[in-house]
Length: 331
Image (tube, rainbow, N blue to C red; front, side):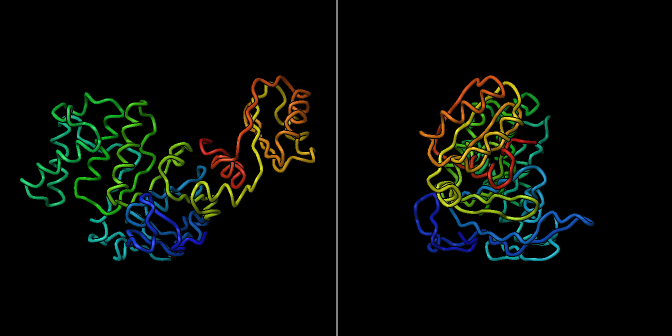
């Protein structure tokens, strides 16, 4: 899909052409000395759409987010937030964004409610409206019952949820979430994902980065896969799987033994399209799993103990692995 295609759909099922852009990035480039971190990235996000930015470490995701949020200036290209140009001094464009960084930025000696009231005051929200808005965002992130507790008593997951509430306090048009579930407990993680789904359904645009592929598949209407500063694929998870992998099937083995040797030998099989290995895991993309599976197991067993085997339709993880040569959680 072209990054400016208007035929895709958002979470509500409405055509993108019927929903205004909240973000449009065109040919973004940024270098740090001799290193090109972002090399010609273009994409758009519409209201009600959750857009995933995926890539291995060093792909350029953080640099893109920093430019979108106006923290970092682009060397060239353009960023429009709600039709207004974004750059480090563009305070109007910045007001349309709720930026939630990886690092929690809260005052531990204040309560959750007091933190939110303080940040609301920085946005110039009147006291009466601020009090009402604080209760609204506490409900969105599921912290209404702990709002009076000091943040220093919160769990890591609760702090991240409150951090998201800070990003929502001024009712932005675009919410930028940079790996919001890293290190959180399962309950908080599910609460965060439910909050994102609710916000998207209510019409907010969301730019989402994660190292958990299941989150991208659950939340994202479209994803962009980045590698070495470039966008290598873009589309819905199902669309990417169909375009990149066709009717192929995916076999995954956990192997105790010579993984490198097994990968080399498996690549010689006629039905093998692509074989990759990391740690104790071997991934084999094949044309016909029914015919290929006995051969794959036999070859792998010659290089160690096959501890488990799964065969399934290719998914976004398979696409990502094929395009970047890495799994999303590789650090």
